[in-house]
Image (tube, rainbow, N blue to C red; front, top):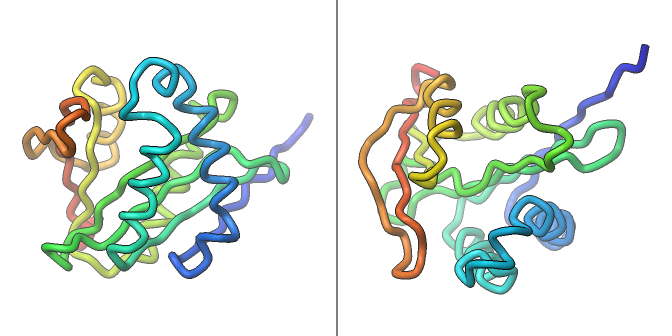
Amino acid sequence: MTVDLLTTSYYTGERLAEIRGTILDVYADVYAEDIATNPFFSMGRFEERLEGHVSAGGWGCVIAEVDSEVAGFTYGFTARDDASTFKLCENMLREKWRKRGISRVMHDDLMSHRQEERAELLVRGERPRLRALYESWGYEHAGEKLPFPDAPLYDVMVLDLRSA
């Protein structure tokens, strides 16, 4: 029987240069179809959003590896307009590592480093199974948001970190 070894590592914005390539590689894998069909999801636009998120302050990222192979990452930052809110921006896994609980492990590791009162994330409206997954983690639907004029419509999900 083979046992996979899952490890997670936490990074702050000061260490982005060390992990930028990893983040971009995973993003390119996970969003390959969207990148090919929607300019909003292009690599260039993602890099712009990443830079904006890091520059906001309070940026943190967890990268998961299974047997030294990068499985995915999750990251977010402290909201500019509300320091009591952590904006969870990305939580993505390469396809071969899905449905193993790794996404939850990354999420919980990232949240263990946070001091904010709540976490907020956006889920595309056309992904109800993903929304249901976040609801099973304790997130509640709090509305809808169009974060950029050319972005898809997202559901806003909020998690109370004080009771999580």
